[in-house]
Image (tube, rainbow, N blue to C red; front, side, top):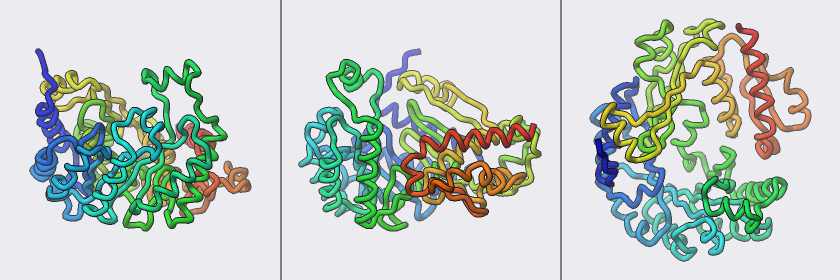
Length: 418
């Protein structure tokens, strides 16, 4: 069967997959929509309208839902912002500026110039006041703390109230990967990367930005991204489109699992975050008496899914099965808790007792982490109380070094359950 991955096919089949995933889940309400992955702003506004209409056909789209459009600051995409602003619902934009240095933009293979980026930000601020985010990449070749500080100061002079910072990752198979491997391009050392990050944290803090997650900074609580916070709270998401990833509780689990009340009673408030290539289904957790200690490592409570990456293969899967999923990995409650710890520690909220007690009522946060982390507390890297476990300002800077130790503690606690 030949499947032609035309743009119209991609849009139509994403809508089809979205509705299929909604219908085969316990979702009843959608509180955020994120059109991201690739360059969704290059699509037509009617695509957004179709997606929102598809959600409303199956469940409730909340009145104040956060609906974000992600795009790059090219002249073409900037011209389309007005059209997208006219679409009912879109109330936030995320602009992939990445750098305010022409040589870095070329190295990163970006299609826009600094001038285009500045113009896009100007237009976006007018159309979405207080609801525009800028993405920046640090750790670029030849980047110094001085040049990075100057670049950030320039950004701070015209940005809105949200900035995301991402460390450059050299992906295998890219031109940059070949340049680094051959020695043509030299990447900053680990210590240099840490210095660049700390410079950014200090500058943003002095400008009124709160680091509410390792890579995300907001000037005021209302500027924080609802969509992203749901990832870090360890909740669920459904991905739609080629290569999308998901964490979902499908209806089949509650229908077939011997602990069939788990999905409905624990995940009883249903909220979905849809992303053009990542549709996020979120469930708040309630009722903490569903699993015995032995169940935590033995029963599947949700699934980790990965869609076919190739558009043609993804289209074929959606045509045949309604969903583009190619790989499903069952997850136990232990898996869910580990993911919550790993993501929760990235935030300024940390791991909360409220969520922990729902996931793991047999042992308190204090019992799980206090005694084993005294050395981290004494070195002012971790704060442990009966209410929460969170990384300190210094701890967030070295979280990748702390996290494996904390996950080992969890594994030891679960071993005692068996």
